[in-house]
Every structure is written in C-alpha cells, then in structure tokens.
Image 1 (cartoon, rainbow, N blue to C red):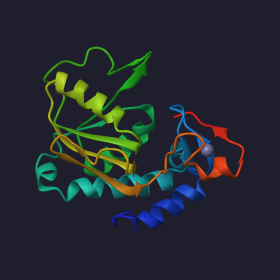
Image 2: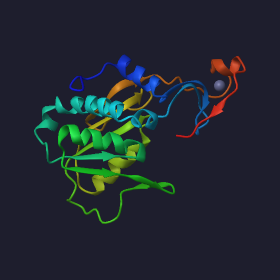
Image 3: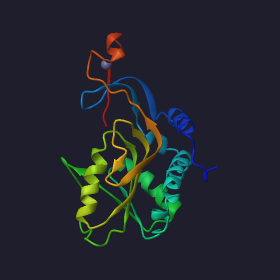
Length: 202
Ligand SMILES: [Zn+2]
C-alpha cells in the first residue's frame, strides 16, 4: 500500500481522522479568515500515517529522472520544524544521504552553525504544508548561499494561493487545497453568520 501515491481524497481523510484538518471559523496570524485550518503535526504523531504521507510524497520525486539519477547524493531540506518528520520520511524512502532543517531565530530563518559551503548535496526541499510559500522561498535563498542547487520541492498540502513553482522547479504535493482566505467581514461567510472566531497560530 505504501508504495502507491495516495489520492488527494485519501490524504484528506487521513488528515481529518487525525485532527490535522479542521473546519470552523479561523483567523490566521496575518488577519485572514478561513473556514479551514491544518495542524499537520497531528497527522505526523501517528507513525503509520506519517509513513504513508512521506512515502507518497517521495514517489512524486522518484518518478523525476533528474532527481532519481542523482540519488543517493541528495539532501532533503526542511524549511521549518513542521517539515522535519516529512524530511526524515522522504529521506528514508529515497535513501538520500543528507538531511538539513532551517529554524526561525527571531525574525530570521537560518541553518545551524558550521554548515559549510560545498558540503550540501543537491536539495529536495520538503515541508508539511505550503501556505504562502515564504518559508520555502527564504530557505531557497539559504540553500543558494551554501552553493547547492534545488532539484525538487514539495509538501503534503499546498494551498492553491501559494506558488506552484520555485524558480524552474515544480512544487509537488499530495493535496492542492483552496483555503478560501478572506479579509475580515465582507467576503467571509462565517462573519456574516456571526460564527465565533478561533485565532490560530501558524
Ligand atoms: Zn470571518
């Protein structure tokens, strides 16, 4: 089963079952309203679910000849802590040689110290969810500073409002989701119905 790429519907069912996909009236940190919220680590707390999701995503990379021909001399890179379990799962499935993850320090995203230019293999960047694309774009800049090319990019879920390419590299995902982000009031149907809001963190 884990050798197949699960369908978007199957993935959404898994996310719903684990509590990672939630429906309500949410206000995001940027002030946007949405009837949907994803808390992806809730799906990754179950090892079997984590494995199916990561293996599914890994297969989207393996079918790319450009990527598969460079294995195992590839690094899997997570832009954030949420992407770390995805990175380990994808690494495992592809037998890639390296893993790196960036962290947010104050308002700056960075890798740990003492990673030197030239040490980083060609990169596949993976995250649990791509909402705006800022995290992968910032991490792309960090990777370029280290002199490594990005050969793949993907996430379990990508919001359709986010970019679908990172430069020349297509962004692959198991689910493409329209999060229906609205400014307060006017366009938000839950605001019109006076549904109480729930403030969420990223
Ligand atoms: Zn609203």
